[in-house]
Image (cartoon, rainbow, N blue to C red; front, top):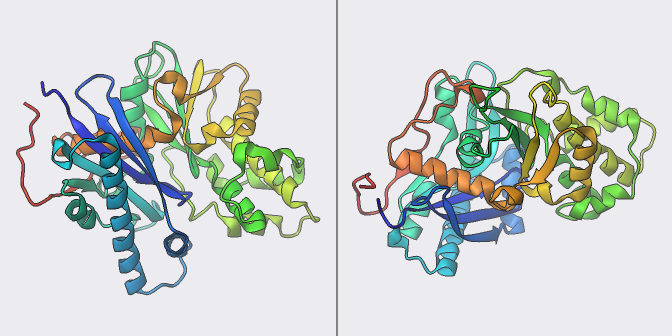
Length: 380
């Protein structure tokens, strides 16, 4: 076996606030997180991305330039990561770049998903072969293209001997029920909003990127009328497999539900949004019948103590824990997942996502964008 097996994972999530970069060594089991780096997305580029996400009319020039500009920023993040780690680029087998989702449309006659952040640019500017465009093959095979992380969750968190669920609270929240003595398959789906509505509301009202530790929400009171309207969203009742995104849960969606209600203070809206996130997650799973002892939380939501407390209150029989307690800090779980997927593609290994996305067969996820030198894909 090789001494090292370095892969990089790159990710920009629904919040569109920055790029997470991780360097992972898969020579050991579990894999070792060698170095991490976060690269902030400049406001002008974030604005262009959010226009694409909102479905606003934009020119093909804007789409193309944003794709390349973001690809350059992903490359900068990867190069900064390597500089921090002291590992040379030639020692890295491949980069797994999720890119930035600007549209996710898993229904209709021609379902599609679109991620930008040109992988050709990443490969050229880092000198490292880059695996990207993970979701569309799953859709071509009849899946929803999301969530993809549950199979990594099974691989990394599934050997504890406990009945576990993994909950990622990014912009959108998704949950994984790990295969166990009770379940023969890994199950997973998007539960609904994670941080996206809370982040959007505090940005609109206070020009802040996020509600640190839920402090603003804590100054308000839950408006039960609003919460009832939010919980009536049909997506929450849909059976799995299912996936969603900013295309559904956004400021326009929220404002349409505020229309017609008596005036609600901004902080009360924020408190209600936090309660909505917690309740939509808690009601997505029958925790008792599944015998879930622990829910391991990753993503930015793991740092929101008010949200974590609200979840624990709603599911008192299940321990709500940060993924840090299970060996991987919450900010880096998804980045490591895409490094893991890049390794699978680099080795030509299919991933069986059917129990999560609904795909009708295992697929090799992601296309490989080579650097200048073709390499033999073997670790032996």
